[in-house]
Length: 222
Image (cartoon, rainbow, N blue to C red; front, side, top):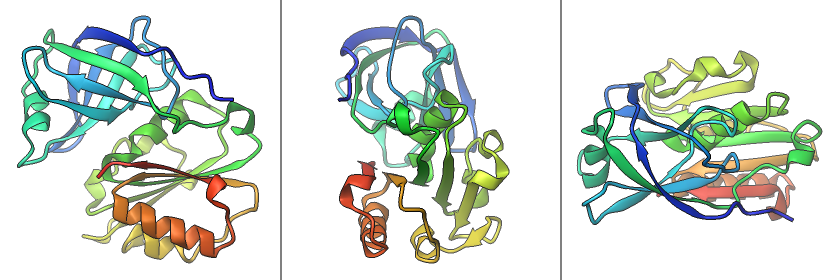
């Protein structure tokens, strides 16, 4: 049975914005006593602002900082507000929330296929950093190769980059097209995170391969 961490509400001071591309950054805060399970998400708000947004936690359970991965959306109000924050500014954090987590008892024994589009890689970085001996493979779908956020942190044989806009990835084309060509062991757990179209298509592909819905865990971003 999953033990859900007690929900807290706290204020954190930003320590850094670590830019990974021209439009995507890791927002870093000191973790302090904040606890969470790898794969969970938090809600961020800016004091004095009426809006808030949910972000998957990008850092590991034992890291000293609490990080989230943010892509600045041109038409998006909140991501642009976050991008203007400076070290020392306050943000309000609610959470953690969610059950998109790995069964620690299966981390080393079962196969874990972590399937993401774009910034949907965030909870998977948290999982990999939390479980050093995790038996995993990441399939990451992006438009361009420079969107392979922090790919150097993953074992090169455990990270497959699918690029649809250029040929800089391991695979040229959509993630789901590549997924159809792969075979998996029966004891595989699948974690899907990203846009809803990818997730719905991937679920159908995996069910056609004989995997049960109980083996497929999802976190929809949009």
